Length: 469
Ligand code: 4AD
Ligand code: MG
Image 1 (spheres, helix red, strand yellow):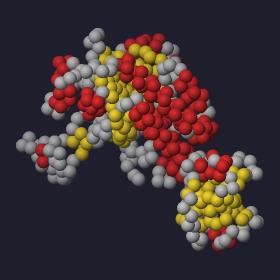
Image 2 (cartoon, helix red, strand yellow; image 1 turned 180 degrees about the vertical axis):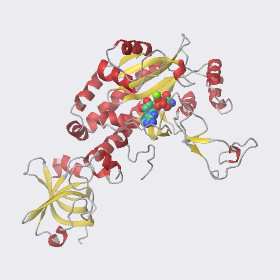
Image 3 (cartoon, protein in one colour; image 1 turned 120 degrees about the vertical axis):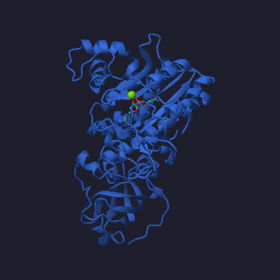
């Protein structure tokens, strides 16, 4: 084996996008996508994941070790190449690398499963550890990374402080009872109270504890000191929904602003969405073009339209009227007071308005305890942002900042006073009108890539019966 010692490690993307590198000697590492051997030289398509397209490497038969290494130049093998960057005479690429030396770093025998053929996304889910080596999953990963960076950039530029809220909690923010419990008690023989129930005072945290469904309540505490904050972290929901939009573990971004009303929250939601979409369009150009070509031919057109068009804003009550009066037959009937189903949300943004829609002022009875009650006493200052293809991308509200009304809401929701006492304190001392929203990060990645299933935009998705890898 030929040892490659040079430290001038270059990514294929840098080589291909820097014409000034022509003539330069570089070291480039990556995995063989394909290899074609001719009489006097070989073509290798090399990919290192820095962008979707490959770098062409030409290895002449007089290159040291050529004969002995040829059979190891298999699809999937990791190789290191030292060579010169030259202008490419071939179609489809501007530069290629002429190898002067190369070595096989890690072999991939012919049982390597990702040979040059198409695999279904369903199959690729069963090899989640290898699928980032495919074009689609490489592109998804890069867009996801860019969206995370854009999120921090957006909020930091607006002076929002990044707060890391806890993943283990005692409270159920959304009140839907969809929490995974966290316990170190012996499952087969837990300590019991006199009445036969489990004695959680002997558990690790001295009380029942769960994985968080949302960082919002903790985020509110910090907004009441720093004015504008955001969280960005994993959240967990034990909802048994096998849909293309739900995961048991997903990442959420939750901004929270003090001295803010619902209008301010909706403005922020819309600005943030547009910022993310334009960031994807300008910084992930080749990946977005890839998705436009292979996944959804209307993607670029749709994203471009979003950037330049104000989001439709519409009250829940008006949305119900539209749904009742439209010709479409829905599986679930529509009436004021019921929660909108995915089919209703999608009809509104995909067929009726053909773009992002913000719905606001939902019935009080279908929403969590913390939302601010409107003057009418029937609705709360909630908002959801819906986008075509995905449905609900963000959900938020103005929070109930009035102590007496919050206490009443808690009672109506049957919440334990002691558990939420710290949260109520935020209304006892220096309370302010405030609000925010949560954006489901995987749904955002679905939206900007047009990937149909949420399980294909999370690196190692967690959903019912699936926690492998
Ligand atoms: O609407 P949700 O439940 O709102 C909250 O959790 C609030 N505490 C947020 C806030 O106001 N700070 O969730 C927010 C978003 C949804 O709009 C959706 O995009 C995403 O989180 N989401 C999920 N994504 C993937 N899998 C699931 N099971 C999801 N549940 C919600
Ligand atoms: Mg919601």
